[in-house]
Length: 107
Length: 122
Image 1 (cartoon, rainbow over the protein chains, first blue to last red):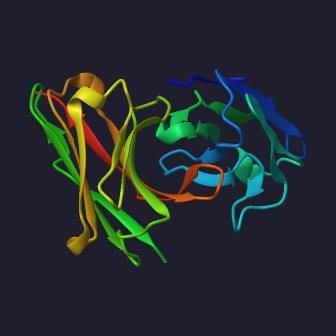
Image 2 (cartoon, helix red, strand yellow):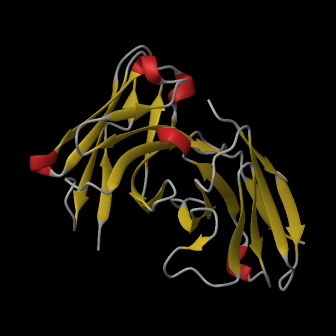
Image 3 (tube, each protein chain N blue to C red):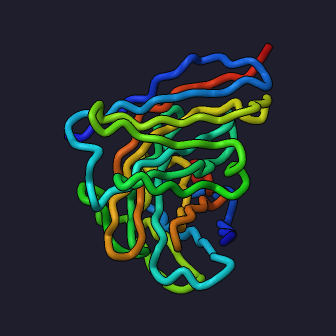
């Protein structure tokens, strides 16, 4: 099964900061990867699909990049509502695997 | 607007079978471009994909759970269900049902239920 390694596991940042989270897949998955935001007590929310496509209704400060094995989620100008946990999810060949999660905390 | 709602017992005894149902409203479960899935999250931990079902009845399971998991669907009722056998405390989690849309580059979960906590305890 494909493994996904997400880093960092947590980070501290201030409002207005640029934040970068990475996921590395254990084999080439093309662009079959998405990014999710989860606030405490809530279901995850899809932000990015197909590695770099912005889901409808998601602010443009969120962006995704990468292909193959290395992927990045970038949040430009962090807002108060962005403090949450973020997960990547690969879905290559009908087997889905989540990254371990990155908790973005207020500095 | 599509909505998904999980329902289940809340509490299951060790070694018994866990059964959850997802009711879909605002859309049909008979779709050639969507997968219907189950994801769980143990308290304070990360997300774990359990499995998915396609409208043809084809199923896809997490290899680590495959021997204990069955996902089925009832299209006439716009429902799909999850069964997990021989449960232990490690199966205690919030269980989510969700719909994934095929985008040309994989299928990501764009709609989620609110989640239901299932506790395994005697």
